[in-house]
Structures are given as structure tokens and as C-alpha cells.
Image 1 (cartoon, rainbow, N blue to C red):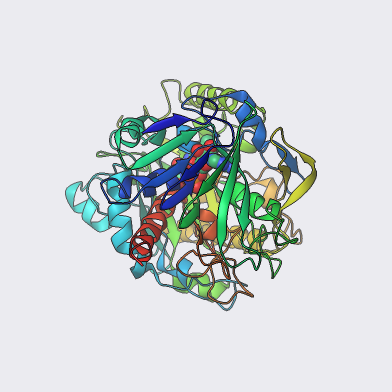
Image 2: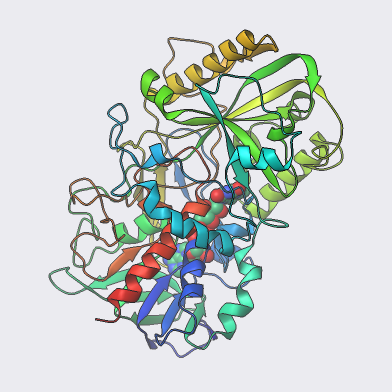
Length: 516
Ligand SMILES: Cc1cc2nc3c(=O)[nH]c(=O)nc-3n(C[C@H](O)[C@H](O)[C@H](O)COP(=O)(O)OP(=O)(O)OC[C@H]3O[C@@H](n4cnc5c(N)ncnc54)[C@H](O)[C@@H]3O)c2cc1C
């Protein structure tokens, strides 16, 4: 059922078994999983069913580090969350993403990739990804024309991406009726969580305060609370909930908001071929799959570098597309999306992926790298002294790199260049922004993927993580976090598939907990 929190009596007390804060990819995936259970689920969504600029404005904040998108337009603040704008690219985090690597500080998840496989399979359904199949070889057996670049299989492998079938799932439209019609899911729109209140010794949450611009304030009480309002908001709300804990909730060890991670996107190299090619496996192919070139984990270990993967785009298209960091610059996310779509359509003349199934061959390709980031305590979300309309301190973001990101990017491009040379098929040209070997900072043209991760990192040691391996905040018995703020490292692929998977894992955990 659905209620608009602007229209109910002021100072209402809303009660349930589980309270989920945020109805985006994480929150809706969880809520769907509770339909038809005997439990009452309160789903709090700050916005309505449509874009509302007064709600979106609550996301405004300052960037103080590496050049980043306006915080107001880097996410969407209404039912369905940022899936209203996402591209739907989904792939598995590699096993190495979960491992402790002695050359990557703060690396290692409290479980291996195997723990997530059953949840990836369930997430596959939520995201409409079709058949669960990520093996390039198996796809190649079905389509023998998928001939990959002839680089050494001892160095590179072909990693498969999946996309929604037929297109990216927009949670706000696909799941609205299911959520609204579910008897035990009580969706409140215009219900912005502004503060989390605990008992006196800060060991349990007692209620969450919600507000909206209609001037209504309500209290929500539940046995268990889940924060699913995305990585910047999750940490912002914890830091702002300081009544009983002056440093912020879950922040005894000064970790909340730190280790903010993105995926660095670099358009810093070109592939020039002797013979024109379609590079078919790397374009979208039926039934909506695509490969990227990734470096084997043993080679990452040998070179002591981060994980980065490579995509290829015909150069004549790529050159017409500035890096996203230069074009996604409007405070209004709808304007940014429109502009980006227009640029992409112009670049490919007929539309973003029109060439893929065509016969065109090209002799030059832009190479884009998506690179994981070192979990860096200086890369962080903090609170501003300025407050939003509902009285919550705004977020400041300091996106910061170490010197390992640039070194890793250069190395991966260099090894690809060697391999292309050895295969005798052409050359790789490293562009100016990465040429200087002595430089340690990332180029100004570095984009992000709008992937926000790490601000409530997972570790079973409270000195190293905000949440434990069940995504529960250390020291608070009934407060959980769903989504990429829990990721200890960010892998080299987009996060939403893994966000849905770990949210479903949390859902299973809570189903056991709520019985007791
Ligand atoms: C242009 C673009 C392209 C992208 N492409 C991809 C892609 O191809 N693949 C991929 O994996 N990812 C992609 N992403 C990222 C993807 O959209 C996010 O990873 C995903 O939506 C995060 O899910 P979430 O549920 O954690 O957060 P969100 O989807 O942002 O949902 C958070 C929800 O919480 C609500 N909320 C916030 N604060 C409060 C509060 N205080 N009280 C109540 N409710 C609140 C919000 O209104 C929202 O509904 C893209 C993002 C953008 C912007």
C-alpha cells in the first residue's frame, strides 16, 4: 500500500517489523523479497513517484577534491532512485575483488565471491538479465563470429557484461505497482529520514524521524532498520544523527564517510589496427551481451596494480564524445541525461548502439578504462555547516586518489600495447593526459561512473569497518546498511548488480533475525 507522508496527520507514529530507508535499487530489491511474508515492512522514500526539484535539491553539496559531478545531479531522489538514469551495465565482481591483496591497502571482504553467487543468480531475475551465463567461451560457442583480440590468454581475459532484456530495468516504473499493491509493504513517499534516534547507550535504534517540505514530521518505529539511501546519503544520515553519539552513529572509530570510492573512467588510449575490424565481441551482440578486456589476477599481483578493464569504441564516434566529467555538469540531472543522450546519438549518427549489429569495420578505436580505486581514508564524505531545507547538514565530497591508480592505468595500457605489437595487428597510442611517467595525480579528464561506494565499509573488526559481514552497524543491534556503501573495495565493474545481490543476502539474514 502507498501513503503520501505530506498528507497524513502531522506527528504520526508509523510502526512495523522492518523499516527500509530509501526506495532505489537496494531498497526496492529488499522490499520485493518481503512481499507475502507475515511481516509489516515500512519503505520510506524521500521523494514521490516523479522527479521533484525541491526534493532533488536535498542532494546538493560541495565537491572539494578531484573534479566530480555536481552532487545534486549525480543521483536521483525519487521512487526507483538512480536506476531512473542508470545504463544497466551488469557484471560479476571478480574473485580478486574479495581477496586481501598485500599490495592494495585495506583490501579484502569478509567473504569470498562464492558467498555471493546464489544472490547474483537471484539478482539476475530482479534485473531481467536473461540467462545466467558469464563465460565468454560459452557465448562464443553459440556465436563463432565473436573473435576476440589475439592477445595472450596468460595476461588478458574477456569479461562478459549483461544488460537488461530488452533494456535496463528502471525500478521506479517496473516495480511501482507490485510494491503499491503488496498488502504488507507500506510505502511512504515524501518521507525523508532526517535523523536516527537510539537508546541512551547507543546500542539500539528506537525510531527514525522523517520530514517533508509540507512541514510534516513523523516517527517510525520498527524492530530492525535498514539504510538503503545510497552511499553518500547513508553516511550523511549516520554522521547527522548525533544526539546520542556526538561523532555520529557507528562512528566511534572515525570511519563513517571515509574510503569513498568511484570507478575512474579514462579515455586515455587508442588502438590503431593494420586491418579494419568490427571488434565484434566488444560491441553489443545478441542477446544483449558485450565483452571487455580484463587483466588476469596473477598479472595484477605480479605488477602490483589495481584491477582495470578496457572497452573499445570506434574512434570516429569516441572523438565526438567528451569525457562524462566535461558534459555531465548541470545541477539538474534531467538536463545532464538529455545532453548525454544527444551527444551519444550525434556521435554514432544513428543512435548509441546502432552500429553494433551492422557490418562496419574500423581501423581505429578509442580505449576506455574503468579502474578500481584504492580504499583511501582521505577520500571521504563529511558534513557541511550548511543545512538543507529539512535541517540536515549537507554533504561535502572529497574524492581523492593515491598514486597507485595512475600507475595501474599506465601499466595496463602499456601491457596491452606490447600485446598488440607482439600479435602484429597494430599499435596502441597512449594519449597525452597519461604520458608523463613522473606525474602521480589522475588526469583532470578522469570521469566517474556515478558509482558511490565504501562509506560504511564492511569488516568484522570495528576498527576497520563500519558494518560487519551481515551489513549490521558495529555496536548497534538493529541498524543495517544495504548497498555499495558496504563495499570494502569496488572491483572494476559497475556496482548495481552486486548492490542487489548483497541486499538480497541481507534480506535473508533479516528474515532469520525477525523471527527471534
Ligand atoms: C548516469 C548514470 C548511469 C549509471 N549506469 C550504471 C550502470 O550502467 N551500471 C550500474 O551498475 N550502475 C550504474 N549507475 C549507478 C546506479 O544507478 C546505482 O549504483 C544504483 O542506483 C544505486 O542503488 P541504491 O539503491 O544504492 O541508490 P539509489 O538508486 O540512488 O536509491 C536511493 C534511494 O533512497 C532515497 N533516499 C535518499 N535519501 C533518503 C532519505 N534520507 N530518506 C528516504 N529516502 C531517501 C532516494 O530518493 C532513492 O530513491 C549509473 C548511475 C548514473 C547516474
